[in-house]
Length: 176
Image (tube, rainbow, N blue to C red; front, side):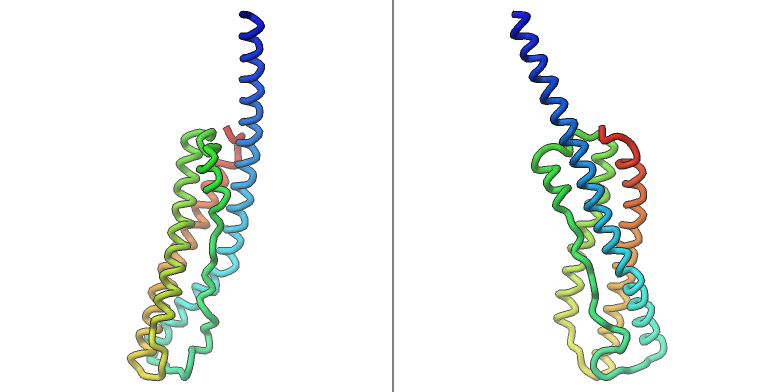
């Protein structure tokens, strides 16, 4: 009986060690994925601020344009990565983390999912807007750009602040 018990104990110990390694690897992969997402946001946030401010300027001054406005070079929304987090959920490895870390990651990835959905909404709405030289059409386009870029910048700023909290709360100490 002692031999069987020791066999189970050694097997259990080995499984716990493997799970701890997997958890540590998972946390590193999550951190890398969030770093990529942070860099993507940092690359476009100033452009989105410029779009917001330029569209507001056009609306305030009544300035008109032919074709598309000279400041507009597309929306440039980013498709933020969610695969490491989704894998953590699917494999159950996410559950190996402390509850506070899981909660922080849920908040962070919830913001990323919201951003991706909002970016898709912006693109599909923009495609359906009528672009022509009429004052009404130009005002609608500028209003849409001003409003959507305001919301997009707010989401991007929230993601960057959330990233800083996630970095501090999840990655600054051991994964478990």
